[in-house]
Amino acid sequence: MRLVLDTNTALSGLLWGSTLGRLIDAAEAGQLELASSAALLAELQGVLSLEKFAKQLAKRGITVADVFDGNAAMVTLVAPTVIAPTITRDPADDQVLAAALAAQADLIVSGDAHLLDLKSFRGIEIVTAAVAVERIAAGT
Image (tube, one colour):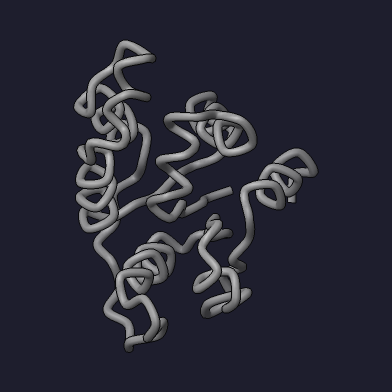
């Protein structure tokens, strides 16, 4: 199964674990494939560099580079497909859709209402982390 995680979902999984961490663990174990784009990786690096995450990183004894490099090594990099503007309320979310389309993803995993409200994009279902974990456990 191939997934694209939106930036906040990837960040939560990388830093806090829980349900999202199970997706990261499954990717590291080769049970699923994560795909991303240069734009999504750049957004992740920018968000990781925000001061509000410095404490969490320091608490875990890791740096922005540690987290970013580990994530970048884990994902399959795709060149996003050019798509028409889709999420007008948050155009940056279109990068997630474009990456998922290019990756031929099975699922887009997000906690973002703008994405979840779509329910699917060109046949790619948009689900929460909990639903993604259920699907992976069920093998569907």
